[in-house]
Length: 624
Image (cartoon, rainbow, N blue to C red; front, side, top):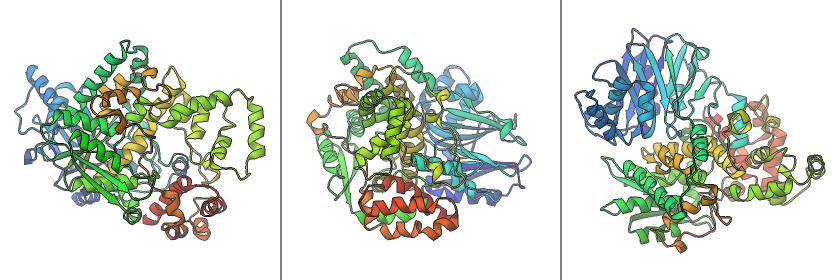
């Protein structure tokens, strides 16, 4: 795992600019640093290396191809690169290998097969910048499901790109104006969905896509190209459903996940896994341990607060599987001490408060290993989130009432002091259809434009019907929306930044694209059965772990944020939310923010999730 950045065009190329960009992302790759420039063109690439595969100097980047046509800066891992080498050798198009890194394999594939065929041949996670000397063309590409980040955009006449926004900011041409539309999206989702970023003119490259740029071209001159499409994978899977028995489906899923886990256990450095004791991480760890001759290193953290500790469950699973388990109990103060660091770790405002425990478990794991596998992706692929179970039932009852009647009830009841559950139900009353119902349900602020001054919320996947895949049920539609937006722009961002701030590589076997594609062939009744999600994934797990160790209500990876904002975080939050300060900065309507903050402090409602997005923006703004 690594960090990469660079620029094309603009000011006369200065190596110190690249060094400054590299220094900002050095935690992504503390083991080595490299720069490549062509001053005649005005192109520069920089790479910071976390050595995982081929620890020798043969893995140094930026790396040139043996034919000297291509230069690459690559962040990620190609798990099937040995198979790709064998393919090249069988086609007699193999170069003289200098080492055994996957970066060298990629370059050879690009030389032999071109861009799109190479990207389609990969099994892995990555973000890369590839310079073609013959065509004088830069290619930026990102993995299929968005595990690795890639930011890009023009500032003045310079194209800037990199693994994190902080690398772009280090360039003298960078001009960072807050995008108020993106700020509205932050308040709605507590993250900023691709392609938007907090800065005007800077984008996230969407997952599964690449773009090719020549010097002198502007944004209007280039078009994104998809080498893999999530919608196509979903529709193809639903059109070709698995038709065998429950046992046959479970066999096939176990085999496919085991294959992904096997590929992701390859490393030349110590490797382990996060273990929460839930279905997803326990499945990954069980299949790791099945394939390992040694006890797998596993890591869990626990909180002392009642209702927020899952460490005891992880310990029981680890004991049953025979892993080498490490757990750390953290106090509220351990998490609170992190809060001032969040604007540096997450280089744009990010409001998922589970960032705190994710960072802490990553920090602990890094003391023992350099690579950790995680169980992310199971909920989106196999129907695990609670709304997949209750939303169809609630909508089924709501839609019976005529829309005009629901709208009248909404207007009459709005503003009344209601318990939190009733208040949530009230919010969804005006929904015109089930899709709008889900959007309202998943929005922290239902109308962020009314809170952000000058904020016009731009369209996203979930608000754009023309971007939706054809699905066979409300449940599958929700899962498709989360796989396309929430998973890459919240879950994977959270894990990538928390881990890389600790120089730890994370890998996500359930997001191997072969697992993803199989998941969409599995019928809904094998995912959600008798009101319980992830039925088939549980069946895989129960072949390795007793059912009673796993079956309990889902908690999620959370912290007691509501309590903290009324207690130890109150002064910090109050300073960021002062009315005079909000008015002076000019981003939020102060009275609206203060009203919600006051109601939270008085204990009338738990508004912690609504407030956290605002607080993360305010803390980020303070750092700028």
